[in-house]
Image (tube, rainbow, N blue to C red; front, side):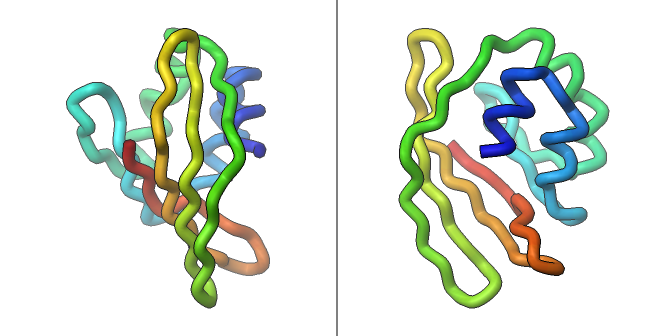
Length: 100
């Protein structure tokens, strides 16, 4: 998945290209929600500070132009279930939000 590649290569553009223009992104242990613009500003620092991730096998539910993707993300000794809400726009799936 491009998300995993973007995180592991510390490529903020690869990740920002996956985000819908109106994305609401959950960050940190306090689970704060930020806009795509806010997230892009802090993304390089977040990538630099965090270790690589491994994604498991996704479980997907698709309804027309929307999808819910549940996938386990592993980072060092932690494993977290992440739910991505995605939207199809111009033949490309974009992340609208995620939660964990």
